[in-house]
Image (tube, rainbow, N blue to C red; front, side, top):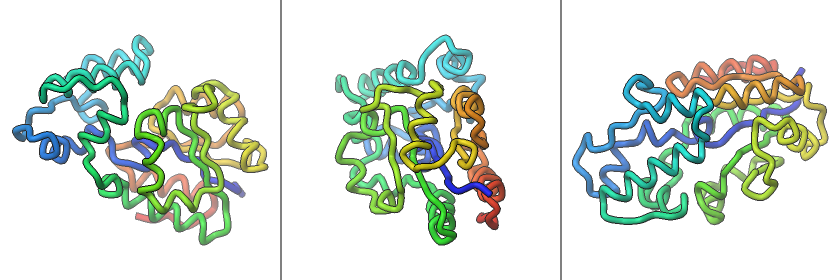
Length: 218
């Protein structure tokens, strides 16, 4: 039996920016269809995304590119990720949290298991006040953010660190992430993993819960 569910944040708990172009365009006053980059939803049309997946560009560099391009569309020069996210996501970040994530979180807590977030850039990307707008984060036993630790996934120390924060062995944790390189990092220290499919979030969460010996949720 696994004792903890460890989740990435962006893509796993929140809907990706690729999925919310309509909301972003409305927030920025752009015409529908202006934002065309689709990442995993249409890799063939997104060369920088393919470069990032191939290891030729870091994830932070990918988003820095999209931040710069989007800012130029509205005549603004954003230099920090929270400026970007704040403008495209508006004042209600709860609106882009996956309902499947909230169901799974409740399921795990009800079962008396532990919850953690392991992120490379939670506060870097969203801003330090972001957590206050999401009360459900209080359900988590640990939030380990490389914004502060400086240890980025897939460095094995990142996964060891979150396991230590939970007072658990890595082998007793299920780790969920939408980036395969991060999944491979967790596997190197023998964590059970789920490669999260952003195009099928319900199925990914159901698999994670089954691996924990819990009933799936849709």
